[in-house]
Image 1: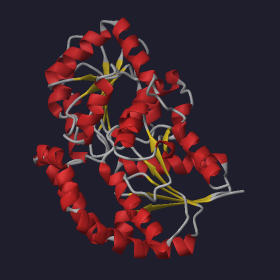
Image 2: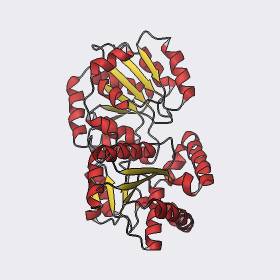
Image 3: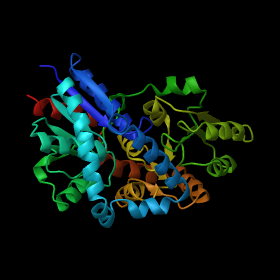
Image 4: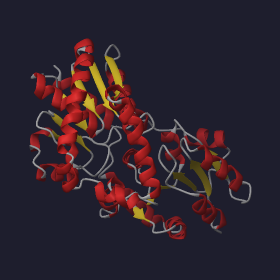
Length: 372
């Protein structure tokens, strides 16, 4: 029996959206006749709030990131905003009712907490029995996810499961299946072919530098430090939708003898990670999950306070990543890793306990089982 699955996220340019796309691919790969609909919950229920919230969030993390860190999963903030959130959820659930009545999904999966709250409110308000699944994209489970009417949670690790249990979520609701990533991460890549396409040497290490969809993690100082290193390696920089940063990197690349490739938004991250030796990145949940799936050693740079700091702690405490305190420190760590194959293999071994390359496929199986 084919299914009708509703996937809900917020913001088009986000890891939450990419996680929804990954789930759609996995669902249709297993059951091609299924119907999958992806909805930007903010845009659908409160388009004005989406615009204002996105602008406020981007301004905050760029100018006052520590303020965001204090707000993240802050119980005082959660308590003070409860009435407002209830109002927003009530308004949203009325609009969601129209969508659900028209589409009649067999299950709803939310890759962000906001739509999860709206659908949970809808289920409670209208006594709906549609399975609701919350799929986390970070190693930092916050309280905005927790609602009695969520039927199942997908989490990236046993540690996150334990944290949810401590927050009062029944253990039987929690499934350690990983962050939803593109099913292409399950497939081995022809490395030689990819390297030839980019004009890369097969004998020189490759450093992949990423900063998430918005390209706000790495900066030109880091690229300059990498360019000045006397060690032999090649560099691929992915700037996402940050065109200003892309332009800067293309200019910088001309000043160094090292091979430096500057890319904008890339839809072949699985290939780039497969050919790389090390990744330098801010620890966004999706990027981290993808690197773990490829056992690609991670040097964490510029983590945002809040979820990214918590992602950093989760990974470094298990030896699955190394945190750099500055651009110079990042290059020093890189040089030490490239000089010590044993250390790289040790990190890869630690990463394998977290790696979930088949996450989206396994989540799709769970969905099909829940909707029999």
